[in-house]
Length: 237
Image (cartoon, rainbow, N blue to C red; front, side, top):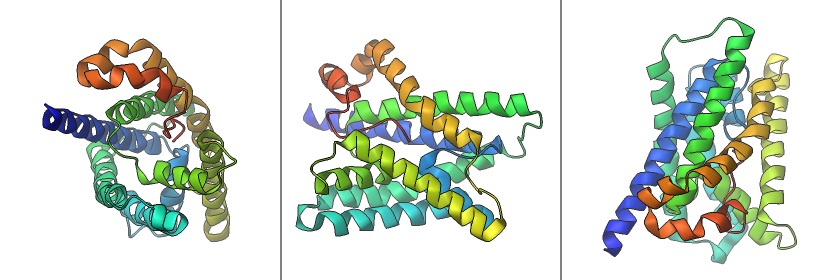
């Protein structure tokens, strides 16, 4: 029974990772920026077009895993970091897969691009919801923010996560300005994602309790605690 529960959590987490990756690809195709978690890899992919967004996502995610090891030292959970290394490669592959599936899709009218960003936000938030109810491990971006919150004990995770996202956006914009004379992967779509994804994920948590129970019955009781931000997960992405 315990083995079945672990397998179920792994599958739900993988499903969430796939949905997040496809949603990032959909948002990126709108050409209005990308979510904060992908802003640095996207800017780098614009600067060095010979490598894909997925390639840079893998490299960036592995860097975040390494930084967690440096920050936490002996406190680091080696198994969790090992899982994050595997997830880094899967995440990058899924993002490139999503972009490949979307192919030449590229809305030309501005309002259509905004709609694509909004649809992508809904999808990304659903992926976040799936990952959190799975309670399997963290993606490197979440893990990095959590490591900082552990090290900076006076600051709650949610505050550190917001600061981490803002820092990612600023770095991505600086990279764009230095290399291309523009904000690179940071545009209005990035801001929309930062503002909406957490709120939309909250709606999923409040309205999809039946789905949580169906997918992972053991996690249903933890749902309220998780969305309140006390379990170390966050829905900003």
